Length: 118
Image 1 (tube, rainbow, N blue to C red):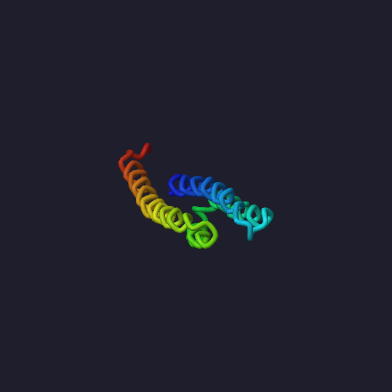
Image 2: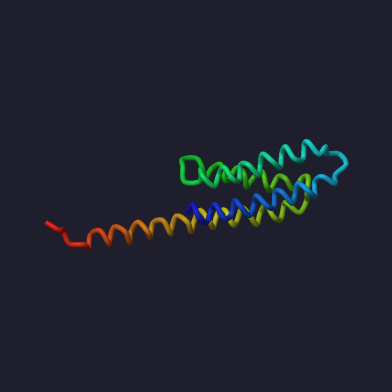
């Protein structure tokens, strides 16, 4: 699960950075505000790469997905990209867990099929 989720989060890191560049063109927003919000979100993406398998890591990832969709209020294209990344996040968590379960099952089978060396 970690690899799939981390890949999604790194993709989001770049999308958030590019959205920050687009948001800078809004005359109502200061550059400091845009880069503070974008920087925190980008940092959270990188931090979550390491925390995704810990308790609450997936929930924080979902919170990031909601924030990404909500950023569409500032950069309208982020509504679309946020939904796309939310679907990718779901797929990463769902299929990542299935892969982890399969790996554990294969490891258990391998352990039970090796004869005891007594």
